[in-house]
Length: 401
Image (cartoon, rainbow, N blue to C red; front, side, top):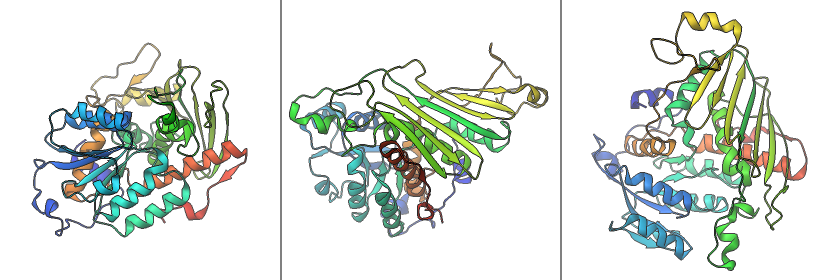
């Protein structure tokens, strides 16, 4: 994704170069490293460390933090002989002058407090999804970020950065699918979602995704990506939310559901979004189908195919605007593969843009406003699910004004 293209697609631009920031002052080229700390060294935190190790021209991990010693030890092994500091208290880490930015990859329940502290300590933030645990935190973080315009806050909805998803968004906007009325999404697995626990006393800390005190469950951890993409692709949010779920398979003391189905009604677009996830069958895995009067796009994580309706075939065969190729190549099911760069995964593109946004003072595509909108969607989905009630979007959730 070229920088000029990113700026054109971004809905927000910051107020130019901030001269009071000594790092930004000196930046003319992508050759100055960002000193970054990782707060939360579980699977996601260490995964992002590994991604940044493939980007040494832009990132230097100068600090790590976790409340669990075995996670810190694992992160230390990954970092090897690199020079870095190790902390168990993020408040102490945030005082370090050897940290420009932080990655927050902790339990969802901790996102807001750590992000708030990072802003107050003038650190840039890459905050994993979902942005916050609940709606009040999302709205408060929006207000707090307004008071800290010099700090970049990017939310880890990485599909906003993958070239394939940009291409699909463009096809939607250009009308290739016609009038879209149905969206079907799944993210299924067949495992109990557990991590091994070195000490039984650490059960809730290690397997935090299973407990309501810490987690938004499957809606936050998996479906939030697809929910966020629809918000972005259509510049929208749901007006009404229905959901159901249960602990239908794993009777092991967990509190968050292992089987859920969420339905969003997008009133402005006259569109329905179905979002489902189970931990009891992996056949479908990740599926994303966007259905319109002229065609359907079927997406996996890194691949997508456009299936035109019969009445749209003649138009498509006349003008090739889908694949970017000079000749349309149909697959055996009558679909057109959507060609987009997939050399890197979404996290790589996301982190690269985090670097650009900090040094060029441009608001991220996935920012505090978009992150808040998706966090509200996830919270409302869980409210509908756990209380068996219909939830409605309220005017105060419109963070874009």
